[in-house]
Structures are given as structure tokens and as C-alpha cells.
Length: 509
RNA sequence: GCCAGGGUAGCUCAGCGGAAGAGCAGGGGACUCAUAAGCCCUUGGUCGGGAGUUCGAUUCUCCCCCCUGGCACCA
Image (tube, rainbow, N blue to C red):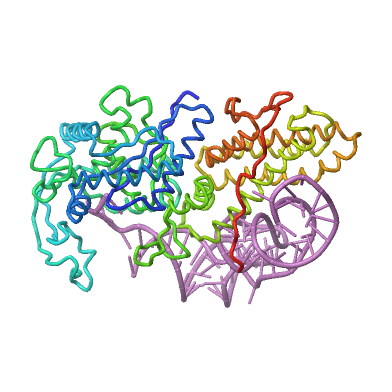
């Protein structure tokens, strides 16, 4: 494992409080970061906030506070949620931080020096009320909607990045790297999008109408367009401008939601290419959540508040659900019924009960001492084989961020282990002294399987994995995912078994 | 409107030319270590509609219906 591992979430825009979408992307990144650390890879996991721009300026004005005060308040909401969701980010970038601003300016200076930026007049429709340019796309029946107020034709000088120059290169790059943009339907979208000629990208705003931004280094009358500001975070925090950059860059994964695919798959790569900086290895865009089959919206009042679920069911179960149910290529439906079904069936019944029955029997039949291997049968060979296959599948899918499949692999082992208990019926073996050697093996097998499972679920459910390890009394053992015949030493004494997940009441249907 | 993707068991989805599958939910049974959990058995589908190619189509082709997504400088 020579290369370090670097994963990012978007830096979230602070015009609103964190919602289920933010939580999903961040949990996904966290699971990957924890997995990488678990297998011993040096890992950097970055998330943060995008704090500049018109929307923030306007939101602050509306509340009668300074933009920075507004950002600080939002930052508290995000950081509180990440804490409650057990997010293990290595840094938290805020674009208003000096360390970031300096490097955004360096980034722009370099683009400018290379001749990648030029100034031209922009013609467009400008809404005074919204304080921004609007596109003709927003017209309804040839008119702009009333909430935009008077829309006037306006000319404005701005700086542009020569994005169009990089179009042929980008098309070829995507063709040559089929796994670069995932999933495939998003890649196809970008490819079809690139069939039209690419325009150059406006990367500035006159300071006169937007003050809340990073000054353009070569023209103090302008501030930077927020996307340039935001995207640069991926390199500014890991050492852009110094030889430190090579330690983590290129990023292994940029995790995003589908709505910001273009900025990450077109704007960002072309900017990097203009500066001869290496491309990120993968860009993964997941879908949105629906609630009960509908788009979430404040007006419908069906917005899922992550904090509520964490408070009610625990961060672990919530994280599990986000990883088990969120689809990549499509939108997914979040329903309370489905959440509870997953909770009861997968967590309480399958996993929780397996752990509890296994440890209880070791307590009851061997006074908490994990016995050494005794008499073996074909049943043992079978479960060991299932464990071997599950582990291989697990690693394969974890590396690809296919959590749905990785968890399926884990649950195949859980199912097999539950069947193993019934087919060996330790309670019958315990009644016959002649079966003692067989009972030893069965209990040892269950202890080992449970120990392995605690490691496999750790990236998804850190607290529960910790509780399970505590009950197994294996806190002092090194975390590892290398399959060994013995996670637990001879004569190992386990702790007290406690249910991991309390079964939830489901309303009668 | 244009371009993609999809419509398979109550739900979520896999299969994509040779006898319809999984998980969950539902029903029944034997057991008792365990969170009345687990285990075994089981109900359930003219695979969106129509036409065609083929010895044979859920799977390929065409038409139609329905759904979803994308169509840039809003983050």
C-alpha cells in the first residue's frame, strides 16, 4: 500500500442548513475513509463549506447580519451534524479562511500568467431584484416571471477562462478513462453534453454588485466567481503551491451529488489541465433522495431531518441505511417504513441477534471463555468458505464504493452464521458430555465469525462495531481485515453480551 | 421539444435468446441459544401493450403507452 488515499466531499454551500443530501455524500465519504484507514492506508478525508457568493450575501442581508456571521452560524450547524454522524474528516475547509483565499489567488494568477484568462464584454438579462443575470431559459411565454421584477438588458465586462480550448482534450480523456466519471449514465450525460461546443467560463463578478468574494489578484475591481473559489479547495488544503501537494493529490475520489456533475467533470478538469495539474482519479455522482416517492421540499413539508433520525435510532443505523439504500444511477426513496424494516430485519434480527446468541452461548456453556478448536465437520468448512468469498467480495466492492454490494456480501456471511447455529444446535451439544469437543468448535467458530463481522461493519457502524468488540473483549487487539484462523487468542475471555440494536415497533399495515 | 435510461412477485431490485430469480413483507411448521429473534417449508408474476425475427423472446428489431433523468455559468 504505497499510495496515500485522498477522498473529498463537495464543500457545501451555506445558503441553508445541512440536509439529507449533504449527510449522504458525507457519510459515504466517511465510510470510505474509515475503510481505507482500517486496511492500513494513509488517508486524508476532506469536507467543508463554500461560503462566498451572492446567495450568502443576500441571506446575510436578509437576517441583518454580516456575511461572515451568517457563515459562522451555518458552520456550527454543519459541524454539529458531522459530529453526530460520526464523521471522521481530517480537515474542515471554509473558503473564507485565509489559507484558502491565498491559494485561490495563486491559482488565478497562474492561469492568468499562462494566458488562460481574458477579459470580454458579457451581454445578458439582468434582474435587479435578484441581483443577478438570468438566462432566457427562465422565460415563460416569452416573458420573465414576476418574481424577477424588471429584467433589463445589460453589458458587463468580465474575465473568462478559456475552457473551450480544452474540449477536445476532455472528450478524449473521458473516452480513454471509462471509469473516471461514475456511474456510467452520468458519464454518458457528460459525453452528450460535450457534443455541443463548449463556451468559455465567466470566472469573475464586478465588485460593485458582489462584494462577498475573493478579490481577483490582477484586478481589484472584481471578485472570483464562486465555483473557481470552491473547486480549488480540493488542492488548496493538501498543499497546492508547495511540494506537499504530491503526498495526497491526485484525489482518489471526488464524491458529489448529480446536480454538480458538470462543474466537477468539466469546469474543474479543464482548469486543472490548463495548469498541467493531474486529474482526480475518479468522480462519483450519486442520485437524490425522494421522500415517500416525492421530491423533498419545504413547501411540501416532507424534508427528512438527519438529526431526528440520529437522535431516534442512532447514527450507526442511519449511516447503514444511507449506504444500503442510496442508489448511484437513480434517485432513491426514503420511507420510514423501509427504514424500520431495514433496522429490524438486517440490524436487530440478523446481525444483532447473531452476535447476542453467539456470545450468550459462550457465556452459558463455557463461562465466557472462548474454547479452542475441537472436532470439525463439513459444516465448518462451509461457513469458512462463505466467509472467504464474502470477504473477497467485500473488499472488491468497498474499493469501488459499491456499498450496497459490499453490505450484501457481509449479510451473506451473517445469514450463513445464523444457519450454522441452527444446523449445529449448540444447546443440544451442551446436553451431551460426549459432544463437548464438537461444541468447542462451534462456539469458537461463532466467536471468530463475530469478531470478523465487527471489523467488516466498522466503516459503516463505528459505534456498534466498538460495542461488539467490547463485548468480545477484543479492544486491545489490532484492527485488521486480514483473515486469520484466530482473531482471538487461546482461552480468551469475552465480555458481557448486550443487544446491539433494540427492535423497533412497526405500525401494523 | 431534443437526447439518454427504465417499466420483471405487495415493496426494492437482479436476470437480458433456451424450463421466471433474490431480499423484505405475507402464510405454515419444527425448535429454544437469542432482541417472540433465528432455522425449515411456502403463497405470489399473461417479465408495460402490440407487431415482427427465431425451432424458441422477459432477453433481439419496430411501433405505441407510462415513468425518470440530462439539456451549463443558479449554487
